[in-house]
Length: 180
Image (cartoon, rainbow, N blue to C red; front, side):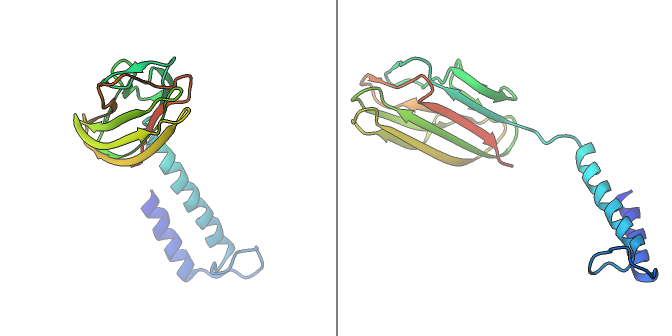
């Protein structure tokens, strides 16, 4: 139907001339072409709607309480948003449901005058490292764009055997969404 309207619009734009003032904008030759143009734009908008919603994937989760970390996966168990349920608060893993570009972020805050060393992991391989200073409630945030394949897992892991305490209560979080 879109192609038919485009052909009709092109034909009428070239061959029809109507006299009078119908408030047609610059570059439009008549009220008929203005009406057809508006109809064409409406059909385009409706076809975008009828094609169905784009796959929405997004999550936001916070650390609960103030857990002590010791070389383990950081679990963000207070889930605020989990569209598609691809973040697992029990394991701390985000699993990509489809191939695509994903934006993933975290903010890690140390509890009190401690420090926290952590790593981003993609399928168990180190992707990047992070560190909070040993200052009162030192924090660090990071954001990355990952190209993930269906089934890839991304998580954040504490990276030392020294016990370190993380600030929970919505100060430390992990979030992400499908970019495209």
